[in-house]
Length: 186
Ligand code: NI
Image (cartoon, rainbow, N blue to C red; front, side, top):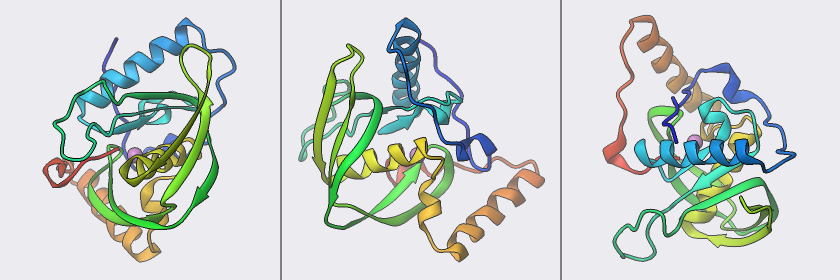
């Protein structure tokens, strides 16, 4: 297992559409192990393969808590290969953050409930119904596979304000300070 570097906006490859995984082999499993390790180290509650430079349709998610129970890392870990949203209903607005969009959070409107299908690391088909935070994170991660960041769901004005802030920091050689304490990122 290795911790991989998380690519951040405006890295161009984050806009690419990821390729379906054709074989869940040892290499795929080792990529997934790296993703899980990288997600927990960040720390984050979800990670999509393109965020660590792997142009493959793989997501890992661990929203950690049910209700107010303490976080039990690993217990709620999901690793989904070729995930697809097959049903979506309702509407919900959540404040989102992204490990690839540092120092920014914003409310995004998404479906309230989703049915996601895909494959697990044992090459079994999986089908998962989700609502609440899990539904949000699954939609956020599957978006990454389409080259879509949560900021692409915002108004052009909001997105450009963020984009200008990042470009200015890059020009000045300043790091963009992560805003981790304000909430979880995926
Ligand atoms: Ni993200």
